Image (cartoon, rainbow over the protein chains, first blue to last red):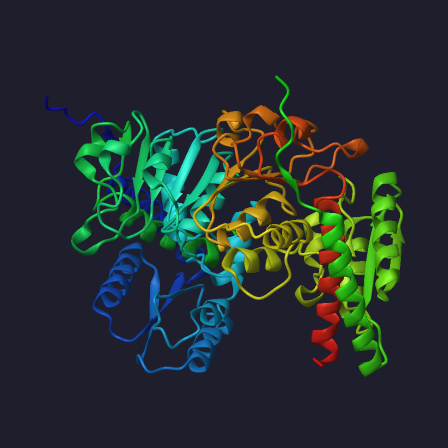
Length: 286
Length: 286
């Protein structure tokens, strides 16, 4: 028996376009009022092709929204001290409103030290411990962009999170961990699953909301999706393959993100929106 | 049919005595070497009887271990600004090594602002966002005392956490949330359950390790404990009644904390140990 997909697609690309349009208007308003456009500094270590592409994509999106960008390219051989210094200089530069340090920076560098050199009020990528704690305690601050984008998507599609079981698969510092904190802040019952989890399929079968964030293509079988569940695939495998077996999952879920065109575009949309918010705080509100 | 308790008790009182003895030795060593004893500052707002008792208990334990304490008592009417100032003064005082601000401080005060006035290197109670993020990311720093005490108890009884399902019931900033982060750092699969959780008994039945931290006496029925589970009751109801129905839970669990004599003594033991650690860092290692 053939089953047909029943899930509605969560159109991240479409929502991102609307968020970016609102960001562009806000930039225009700031520029008119203050004579200054928001500025995002991007820092790239080395020449990893994927990282180069990501940074370029972010710069292109910035330009489209009227956000200036300043780029710092450092050789792969840069040391922790030098990188920390470069980031700290941007933190102190009044013309820079937001800072993005492209992850990963290379195994010989203390990435945490480099992230911590980002001033909290310029941490528009939500990677500092300050931002993590703010997400953990529901305090004002910037959110990690991918988790923040996921929350906006869920809100857009009217997903009620309170009391529902959200299972986050993956626990990275910039994706899984903060995503769980944001979901907990919305009163979801939150489970963190990961590579050491004993019986992942059993947990997936319980998830009212599943957030897959491992980067392991096809790790989650569609047959394990709970009927009616909301499936958010933040996977980022090569060739844009998600963590979830899409076809079979779409037969069971009520809502599902496509890959690509789901979470990905939202990540950059949140980055730009937060850059403008940072600029607004620095330059004064309208 | 009557069933007999099969669970082994996790003797927090006994372990706390051993930890406190080690702390007393460390104090003695520091005093001999530097001429200075570690000093914990306690800050109490108002005269809530439970809070007065807790602070007095901590001071008594400090004295027994040779730790000096300095007490700041403020009237219930104190404002946020004044409290923040008092805490900040202790943060800057070189003679103070650790700071404990007794929770709760009263509804008219911004407790978070007061906690944040504690310098991270004096946050021996593990209440700042800095400490939370350190627990979240597995970075060096002080842990929240009750979660830290729970981890020490689990270690003492050889509980292997990797891959096991730990369910934390309760999500307060100083207990549930940091406890979940510490368990995740030990590779447990971690679920945060709370007052909005749809079906708490079903989650409890899945827990290999249950950490109850709600302060709602008897909330967790013994019959829901998974056979062989490890049960940690950090409940603190009046009259020392825990969150877990002890008798029935002890018939099913493999290990269980008594209330009192389980988690409680470990909280103070960790507070003292971290105060000595803070002093050691400030005064230089042996």
